[in-house]
Length: 271
Image 1 (cartoon, rainbow, N blue to C red):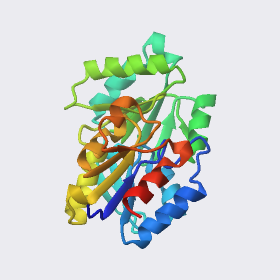
Image 2: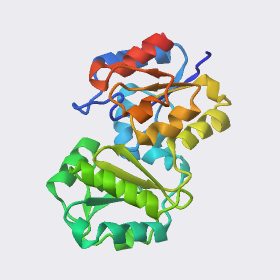
Image 3: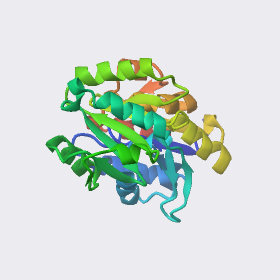
Image 4: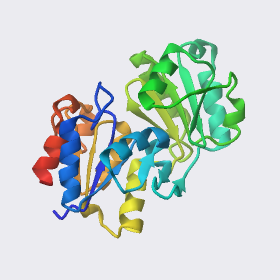
C-alpha cells in the first residue's frame, strides 16, 4: 500500500500512563516523517491540549481535536472545521447529568472556544485538567454555556460501571442523528455533534485538503471514538489495550501502549 498519511490517536495509543510521548515513539514518528509521510494527531482532547504533543513531535499538519468537532492549523491559527453541539442537546444532557442520583457521582465538563468550564474544582477535575495541560474555569452553573452551543460535553467518573450504564442510557435516549455519544476511555463519556467523528475529520483532511484516497491512509487507535477512523483508513491498526470490539475493526492488532505498540506498527508497515 502507498501510505501517504498516518493518523494517530493520543491517549492509549502514543501516550500511556506517564501522559508523555516516550523516546521510542518520538524517534519512530521522526523516521516516518523522513519518508515524506504526513502525520496527523486525531484526539478527543481539546485543541490546546493536543497542541502540546503536536509541538513536541514537530508536526506540520492540522490537529483533529474534540473527536473531529474541531480541526485547526496550529501554524496559521485557522480553524478549518467546527461542529459544536446544538444548544438544546447540551441543555438536555445537562438536565440528565444533574438528576439527583447522578449529580454527585458524575463530573460534567463543557468546552467553549477551546476553554474548559466546570461546576466546581473537584479532585477528579483537577486530575483531568493536569493530564490535559489546561486550566479549568470554575463557573458553578453550566447553563450559560449550554445555551452557547459547546464544542463538546464530557462526563467523567471513576465508577466504570456507572459510566457504561450512563453511556448506554444516553445512546438509547438520543438518536445518532441528534448527538454522537461515545467513549474515549472507560471513565469518560463524550457527546459531540453528529458529524463530529474522527472518521469524517480524516476523510476531510485526506480527500479535500491533501487529495488522497482512504487506501493511502493508515490509522492507529484504541477506543470507541476511534472506530469511524479505523473503518475509514485503508490500513487500520488497533492497540493491544483496545477493547475487543475495536480490535475486530482493525486489519492488525499491535502490542499495548505500554509496549510501544504504535511504534511497532509504524515500523512494520511504514519503515
